[in-house]
Amino acid sequence: MSVEYIFTIDEQELRYDVQLDREFDFSAKREEAPVWTQLTHHQCSNCPLTTKGCSHCPAAIDLVPVVQDFQQLPAVTQAKVRVVTQDREYYKETSLEEGVRSLMGLIMATSACPILAHLKPNARNHLPFASQDEFILRSSAIYLLKQYFAYREGSRPDWDLQGLITINQELQILNQAFWQRVHDACKSDTNLKALLSFFNLSSSVSYSLESQLQQIKPLMLNDDESPAMAATSGVSRLF
Image (cartoon, rainbow, N blue to C red; front, side, top):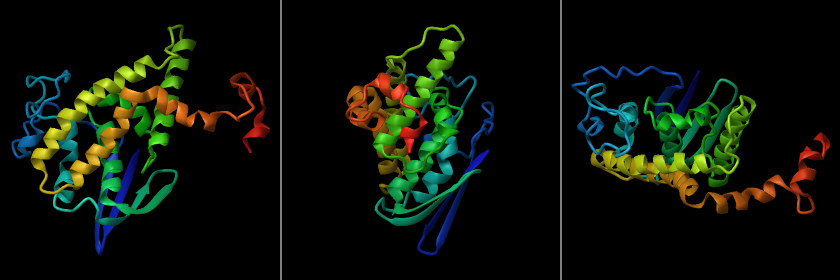
């Protein structure tokens, strides 16, 4: 399964085919890889990998083509972006900041990084150009579905979403270190702004999940409807 991103900037076309289940060779030497991809270069403080088993950061290695292609382009540069999945296509004329943010987020979420592995269920249901509300809604829904399956298997579910907050706190530590990696590689602001906007989405879960959920609560319930009524109101109310 793959997702293809196609950027058209003036007359230039850039294509990125992201394999969602790609393999990563941890033992490869990678002598020609950029310095900023080395595992010890601004390594995340919570990274479980060591140089004994992995010389380079998996997520950084996967991002090399994107960083190199966009590092000299301003973030405000306009592009036509097509995203092609197995089931549908998306299209948006937008800034490189938003397009690259969406692409970087998908690549990082499907990398072999053990911390970013928490995002793989989101990546398999990738929504390009997701807004803040969409990110919160999808992240919370996927996490709650995992808790439901845990409940069905006899485990104790986390209906309060404390685990989701913990996951995003771990991601926030990763975000800060990874921004330093890309900062060392960039000659312009496109990749930096793309990373910052992507990181801001996940940081909102760490610091203000409850307030974010309150903002989307009206989308889940009618003004005159209680949660219990919403659960039993029938399919006809969806249309």
